Structure formats: C-alpha cells, structure tokens
Length: 87
Image (cartoon, rainbow, N blue to C red; front, side):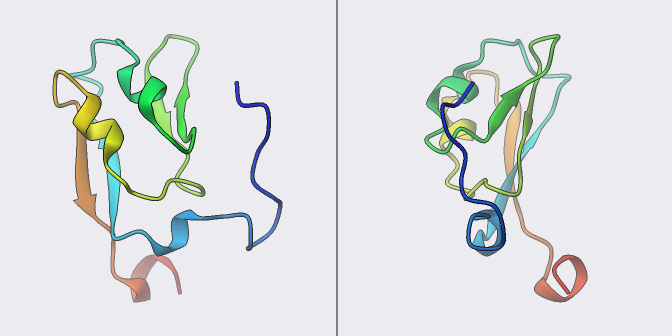
C-alpha cells in the first residue's frame, strides 16, 4: 500500500498523456507480483486473489511492468485516439 497518492484533481492524474497502456492477460499471469514490485508509479494494484490490475488514472505507460513480467502476461498496447476516449 502506498504511503501517499498524487493530488486530487486534473493536476494529480498523470495517465492522460501516455502513448501506450499496459494490459494484463490474467490467463498468463502466475501471480509473481514482479510488475507490482517494479512499477515506479505504484499503479499496479493487487486484488485479494493476488492478481493485478492497472490504475490507468496514474499509469504513465513506461512499460517497466511488461518488461519485468517473466510470462509476458502484460502487453503494452497503443492508447485509443484522443477523440474517442478523452473527448
């Protein structure tokens, strides 16, 4: 659990400018939590069953989680175009 979170409001959310986003494929995940451990922004979160999910509000799309995953369960995919998701 992080000891602090980014500030509330639009200035605190950092995920709006990324070009790629991590997608977790749970069928490949072995719950090793390397992605959770190595994420520099603490945006990989653990569920109660130890599977992980991504907090896209704060994820910067750096790809470290995907690189750390030994089973390639995290795929970096292009962000949707600005007009469709962020309008």
